Length: 190
Image (cartoon, rainbow, N blue to C red; front, side):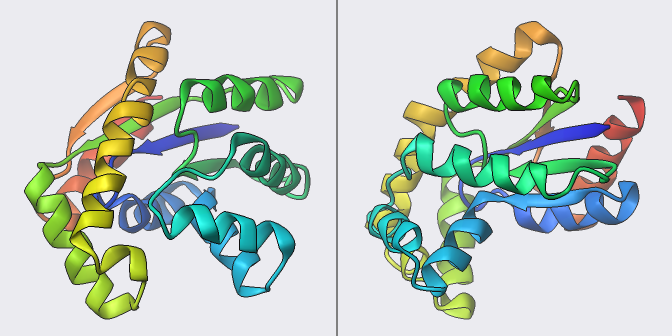
């Protein structure tokens, strides 16, 4: 099974690039953002709790996210693999994900890390906010907080995966197709 962590700050293009990888390798897309948004769109208790954190640009508590991930994995046992988009976001989440995956002998194959300049991230998110209507993509102070939270809490994941030989940094600037080509080239070698 091929399990990939698609990594990068908010606005790096993870969702866009995930589509190329899904088509190229027949993987299931596991986006915690999508899972959480579908929960609060449905008005569930879990969704409303998650929404309160997301609207402030903060991370949803680990136990909430990990429970949702485990349920998704268990309901898709016949897959060729997963692209984890937006998860893990902390070293503790990465360890918890490893535990869940190791129970099924399906470890992470690689972490694909999209690297994008801060101002480009802000520009992309503001642009996306105009199209999507997402409140967290329309306020520059919330965007900057999300980037700061990423730098403080999520960026250390590189140091978790690097010693395992699973970290692959990719320049996330340039055309969507060029970036996809780089990602596909790396995955083909895994």
